[in-house]
Amino acid sequence: MIANRKDDHVRFAAEQQRRPDGHNQFDDVSFVHHALAGIDRADISLTTRFGGIEWPVPLYINAMTGGSAKTGLINRDLAIAAQETGVPIATGSMSAYFADDAVADTFSVMRRENPKGFIIANVNANATVDKARRAIDLMEADALQIHLNSIQETVMPEGDRAFSSWEPQIGKIVAGAGVPVIVKEVGFGLSRETLERLRELGVTVADVAGSGGTNFARIENDRRDRADYSFLNGWGQSTPACLLDAQGAGLPVLGSGGVRHPLDVVRALALGASAVGASGLFLTTVLDGGPPALIALISGWLDQLKALMTALGARNPAELTRCDVLISDGLRDFCADRDIDIRRLATRSRSHRGGPEPIGGTR
Image (cartoon, rainbow, N blue to C red; front, side, top):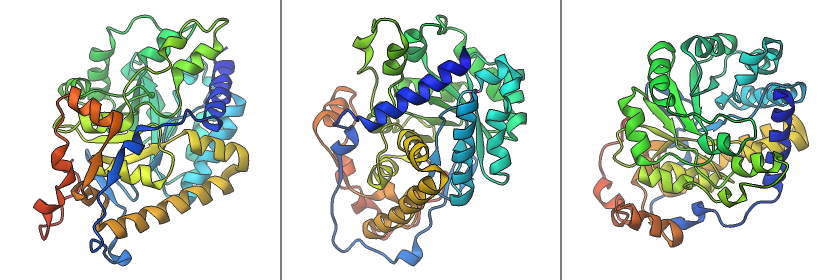
C-alpha cells in the first residue's frame, strides 16, 4: 500500500510539473539593475555556509521519493546526477523503510551511487529518535530532514490526524540525532512564528519549502475517490513570502518550492536563503532523460548562477543579500499585511558599498 502511494506521488507530481499553474511569486521579485556593479567571474565562489554546514554550491536536490521499486530507480538516477555535479541531495520520506525494511535499498542506493556526496535523510515529525538514527545510519547521512506536512496528512485518505506531539518530538530528535537537523515543510511554507518556535526547540536550520511548486494537497486530493479537499489547493505561503517573513527570526533558512530556473535561485539567495532546493523540475528531467539530462540541467544552472552573480557583483552567495531588490504585486501585499519593511531592500547596496566581505554562516 505504501509503495503504491509513493508511485502515485511521483506520477501526480510529474503531471503537475508538466502543467504549471502560471503565476509564481518569484516573479514579484526583481533586481535593481546597476550597470557598473559587475565583477570578474574568476572572483566568484559558490560555496555557502550555514548552521555549521558548508556546501560547495548553494543548490541542492530536495526530498522526493523512495519506498518502491520504481522510486528506487529514480533515487538511483538522482544520486548519479548529484555525484556528477557535486550538489547535496535529500532522500524522500523514509517512513516506508520503517514499515518494511525490505525497501531499504530504494533509499540506500543513493549512498552507493554517491559515496562521497552530502546526503540528507528524511523522516516525519512523529519519528522516534531510534527511527531517526536508523535512517541516518542506513544512508550514512550527513544531515537529517524532518518534514512537516499537516495539510498533506489532512487531505491524505490514510494520513495522520494528530499533530500535537510534533513539537516535543522535534526537540528530542534534534538532541539525539548526532547530525545537523533541518526542519522543512512540504510545500505550504514556514511562517516567522514557526521558525522562532523551531529555534526554541534547538533546530539550527530550516527549509521554508513554500508553495508554488509541487502541491501535495492536490496530489492527495487526486488520490481520493472524491475531490473533497479541492478548496485547499491554494493553501500556504510562497517561498519568497516565507523568506521575507523569516528575516529577523534568528535561524538560517533554505529556500525551496516553486524554483523554476537560475534566476529564481538568485532571487531566493538575495532574499536570505543560504541555499536553494528544487524537486519538481529535477524529477521530470530525470524521468524524461535519465541522469545525463539532469546532469546537464544542473551543470547549466551552476554555470548560469555564476554568470548572474558576476553581473550583480556578488562574489559569493551571501553577498547577494547586499543586492537591491524590488517587491511588487501580491508579494508586496503580503509584506504589508505581515508588517515586513521592504523599502530598505531596494537601497541596501548603499550601506555595503566598499564594505568588508560578509562572513559565511552569519545568516
